[in-house]
Length: 312
Image 1 (cartoon, one colour):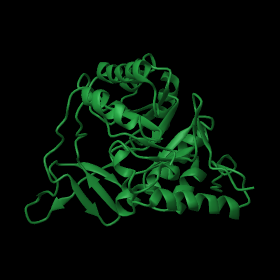
Image 2 (cartoon, rainbow, N blue to C red):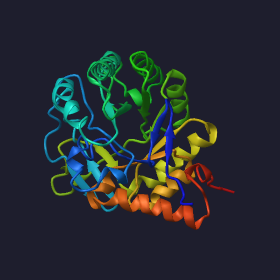
Image 3 (cartoon, rainbow, N blue to C red):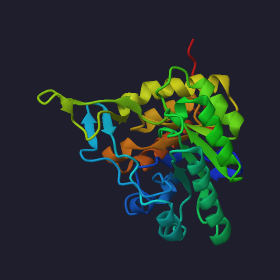
Image 4 (cartoon, rainbow, N blue to C red):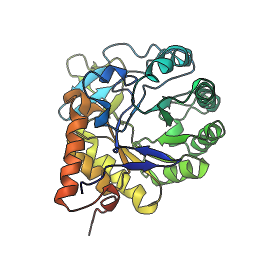
């Protein structure tokens, strides 16, 4: 019998494999359909949506590094009205599951986004929508801190969103903390069903001739292969203390080997992001590689290898 890649997340969410396409890397999923068939991945996490349209930051927004990518896109998106009126009716006709990534500047904005998307699903039909991902790396205008680094506001936004939906909620963590465990515990205790580990690392790129930023902002988010060891550490650290709490690993996956490392560290599901830009066929290659690895290891499924990293 062939190994199984079937992946189960809370609230009855079943994916055919653990592979999710990360927010901001494939639009709303429809753009990716001509490249890779949805049978090669479990679902799509949509581009972040905000209450009002956002133009994003000035160019340049991207800067390659020797082992990764710096970005300061600025969460450009057309706003929730366009998402509900145009995007969701369109992608609900397509054959893939998706999670809506939401981003706000206040607790109330996060709650409003979840409430409006949930109401749309209740009234117009669920389609392929299976849950929400909360992008907590945005600054909170009420406190001046980032949601993901302030335990009080993290709890507040998670509780507010939980009150608006019975669907899956995944909180997206930042790696820009010394110890992610308290934030993971706060997310769980406030109603998040799972966490994504993680968003991008803070970074800068300097033009040595002008002594100014190579990007349109002073700092940016680093993703890609460069952040794999840091992400694996956070996954391992959280999973070791919270073995029953599902983790979605995100960061540094560029081949099947790096994807497997995420699962061995403790991830239940994984996200592919920057790696898609280097290799658009990455989901198929990771899916095939996971199957080969399980067969070679004589393991029946992903549950049998999850969190089995031996560190001593």
